[in-house]
Length: 295
Image 1 (cartoon, helix red, strand yellow):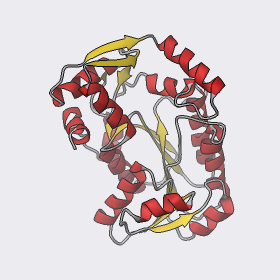
Image 2: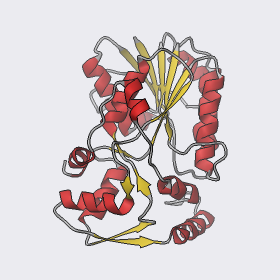
Image 3: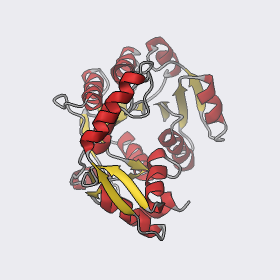
């Protein structure tokens, strides 16, 4: 099989390509990245992959790179926008370009975010829902796998959790917010399974095996790090006020109101339908935390 992967230089993309190389060595992987810098970083991973530098909004370039691809895996997405890279640019425009590339693939598999709905008051969720709809309105059947916080070795979310777990005093906004983190390799396995599904327009909601409060997650991480952090919950309104100020004073703020809203989303779903469809066994939370916090 020939696979086309967009956004292939992220943590998930690299892990996915490595898993394909290991378990499906006869598959050909074509990876689209948007800069020579990203291409150089991907080459350093030592993977069997054909790397193409193409803008994610360049439908003609995507068409050329994707000739002969049987399945497209679309991994482009952000949770924090800036003046140079808005949600519309990262989501709707890249999905539209993929549709306009008019490739002969039989199936698209893409990652989304739990909470993505057209009716949401969060601009990131609305943008992701619109992006998913663009793909599913196109001629190629599209499977959308929506996930919450993904934890993997060296990832930003894992580093932040490790820092809080090792702290004496951990500060967080709305510590009662529900988290249902999923292990990065479970997401990789979900994508691999989805590639083999009968092509159809579907949305799969997938998360980790446990939903717990942010406070409980930090304390759980602390126990694995032989620490007992005191978790101080800050009002979420304070976070939104701070994000508003940063948005007004910076073209690329470190946190935005939309990003905070995504991170604050309560995740508590039943995963049985998704795991049955994908034939997936989820990594237990404590094992997940050991893998990402103590590497």
